[in-house]
Amino acid sequence: DGGITQSPKYLFRKEGQNVTLSCEQNLNHDAMYWYRQDPGQGLRLIYYSQIVNDFQKGDIAEGYSVSREKKESFPLTVTSAQKNPTAFYLCASTIGLADYNEQFFGPGTRLTVL
Amino acid sequence: GQQVMQIPQYQHVQEGEDFTTYCNSSTTLSNIQWYKQRPGGHPVFLIQLVKSGEVKKQKRLTFQFGEAKKNSSLHITATQTTDVGTYFCAGRTAGNMLTFGGGTRLMVKP
Image 1 (cartoon, each protein chain N blue to C red):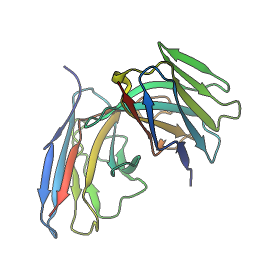
Image 2 (image 1 turned 120 degrees about the vertical axis):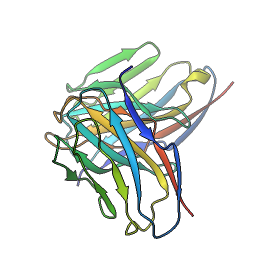
Image 3 (image 1 turned 30 degrees about the vertical axis):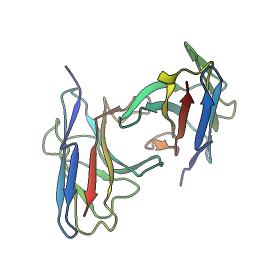
Image 4 (image 1 turned 90 degrees about the vertical axis):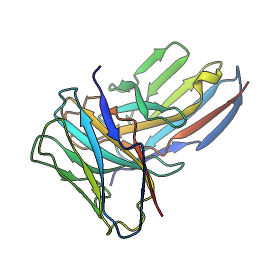
């Protein structure tokens, strides 16, 4: 079964702690993305990656970091510099970065800062 | 930067009534995509429109792309409880990332 997995589904962290969200895909897609969704709002792009060892900032990259060491994996670290990290985080992938590719989303991780 | 606005933010309908959500971009789009997110779920791709004035149908859903390629709409005929969820449009200008609208949350009373 091809798809995108994200773990954990729910994550709680204390203020001042860094936390890493996992995203894995077995679709053989080149491009991967991280979005943040706040209640009642749309998706905002945090980071994206076109190929291994390359990634670009999205609209709201401050306080986040990513890595892309393997094609299948694109973990997101929410650092203590992110002032309001409580949100629903969605990972997505596309075949490539071309204009006409639909995005496939993972199930998401709901992060709550206590 | 590119902005994509979606209205209404919420819509309550009685089962069997029609529903429409509208999407407007501040810039001309190369294409527009529509996604549906069920409560507690993740967005799932519905359709993509590319051509000016394009109309596509999926059963009770009708999608339109404006002549100027700056607006789009999704119309659902005779809503059912299975239509509940948030509908997002996402527009792209050539070479850029997708920009998502804020979504329209549809609630259907049985």
